[in-house]
Image 1 (tube, rainbow over the protein chains, first blue to last red):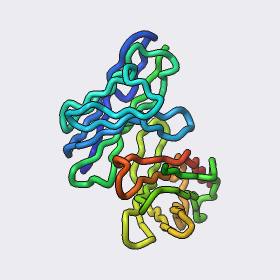
Image 2 (image 1 turned 30 degrees about the vertical axis):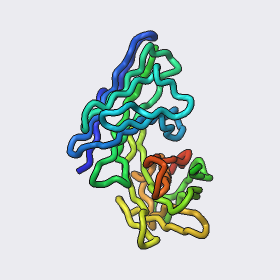
Image 3 (image 1 turned 120 degrees about the vertical axis):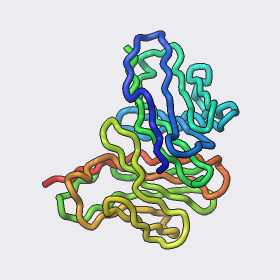
Length: 116
Length: 115
């Protein structure tokens, strides 16, 4: 149990376009979802925390207009990278917390974004 | 503020030998501690956690970790390493109360197990 999926697993786009990444909890309801960014050979940096039905809370230095997060249901959160630029190229990972196991986060497989 | 230190960027071990990946932490109050493993271009896979109870925690794939409150450490260990254990390992901490369930990760330790 506690499986989190992400789609797509890999995306290549042109500079200036917007890209949407989906994060789904497959077998549980996610009261909270987290979005992380990971640069090559570096740790995970928390970008934002989102609770179902409310606005996301962004970490310091993360542009909320650049990285739009929507947590419309208890099983789905989306991250939209707007007007993507090459410096947005990164590995984006989501995680989810369930009501029944609130002390843990369950991680998705990640999405590799490459902006040309 | 909470933090995690993984002092070694890379650990090299011969297959069959014991391995240790070090982690120390800083957090207000009691910690919840986690170890995750990441293979190339993949997300994080959960290995084990310490929430409360026995200081020695056993997890997936034969890994274990010992919570040491006085040394604020949570080192990951395995008695006999396998080549397939080669991966990037992350230690993470969160406070048991408050903080919005935010996890803080260490910088990761690359484990290389050789024949």
